[in-house]
Length: 515
Image (cartoon, rainbow, N blue to C red; front, side, top):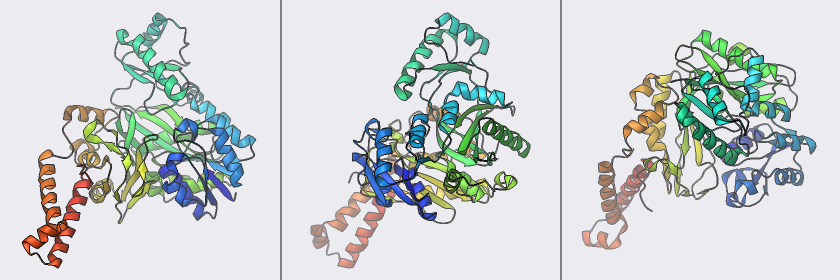
């Protein structure tokens, strides 16, 4: 394997490019019109245009990506996550084109990509699943028949899309009266998001934890699970903070959950990196939720506590190498790691996307800090793609120190030109329930609702900073002001430095100072 085309963009493309460089493999990027000057394009050895900015005309075009791989002379394709990463047709097209797909087989992707088929596979492997319908609901099944199925499952329940994820095609139902409308809405959203309107019913576990197990499988039948990740800090079913290990998983439960994850993977002949997701009930009972047949967004925290490079291992497995990892070491974390997903969103405006040009970006650094980013000063955050600009990771010897380190790193983050979720995370990392580890999958939505829309940047502080900054800028930057005041040049330089410091500090707080 000498040349890998990365069928993705942004921070994950940069992450894979770096792994390729370390393994003496030439990385090839693809880009849409909107990504012509993107960081992943500049980092790669080669870059191939694949179409207009909308994903359906570029990053989701299997034919154009296969053609780009041929033109570049690549012998393998890494899909990253998102876009075509869990598309069995793409994996099959790579295989048919003589390209090594760095991931599981198309057949396994298809099997585990269907939540109902994955539930059946888990059941065959002896792993408990959340009670629900075993098969997708037929489009022509009467509402009354669906209601009877729901009565048997019990309320509250979820209507869930068979395909996809990220909370799309999902509706919570608390009684019979809501059911028919929820099914229609979930089907419509699932069809729009995934091209598949199939849905099923599943009991809604009250106040669960979302725990997942990273694993690797090779082509020789070896499966190695890793220490669990805690993914319960979610906003509208979307993870925003992940950490490892989980405070809610003692050693005996870890052994049971990781053994169950490995059993599912072995049962389907899984290869490459994958993740089994579980719901953990308050009484310690866990249920299989789904499998992600790709690299996860949150994979860096596993790397931080194990010292392994999961992308390296994906490539090595695709080469046919055997896993020679110590299973016990994989389940024994070294320290604690936390990840925040930094989005170009305005937390004071319902977390709406904040596209635009990044005028300034200074990522935090120092001991135990890792920033996986696809952004850079002077580049645009397009409206067409997921607004995540980086993944900020903090590692330390234990959770309290990791939290303290993350708070320090968030305080160092400087971004100008767009709004980001840094102020939101700064607030979250001060909440008593979070600090104590007392949370569940709806915790964040509950506390945000209770917060009542109060700004994450206090208005009084914002006005005070704006006034101080304006005064400093006027003094420092106006030659007329300097002449009138008789301020010496050295003093003017000091004022300019102070003004810039105020600008950076205010922008870092997310106050949205205009340029």
